[in-house]
Length: 253
Image 1: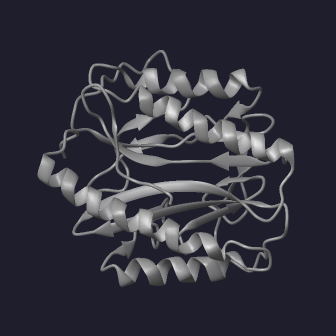
Image 2: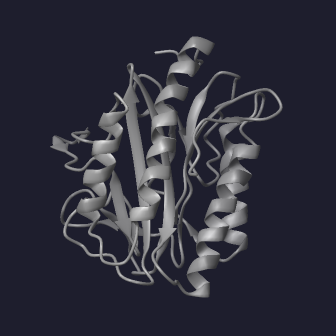
């Protein structure tokens, strides 16, 4: 499978990304105190299906286990891959919503961490820095740079603000498959010599913990949480590597 997509393929990926973007706009008003994560997931699935697309995460298989939800919905100290369920959102929570769609054989992927009601100033800063780090990384996603240029930009900004950048989980290429090469870590790896070429489509997704970068997987086998119990934020965009400036295919509003 080619890492460099044709413009026709990029147009098809853009259509899948448009579904993801529209889903974020649709679901935002429902993220309020008193709603359950399952209720949000049902609405997300119904909306994606209404767009002649399919929720890309539903049934996604890892090590013989299928993900049961349509979106990954992670609350507070949960980093990613939270399973939607009976958890009721409370004032002061933060909720990471990671949405993928498959349309006409191609994928789109994005994530946003929302505030529920009024959150503390420390949480607001965590979300602000994490979102800004994503765009620091996107600035480096141009032809001729290396994946490590993205990684270093994110890591330096996050750690410069005193937060932990998660290492066990990384961004990725995508296209016909939800996860393709290259891997896009959010930290420097001296062994990563991958050079970016125009036409590559990648998902950049910093996952940032308020405290330590260490994480663990909960007993459900999917949900990844911060080991120290501190809150975590996650923002993600699908982008196309271009000459001079990356093209962002997803949006949140």
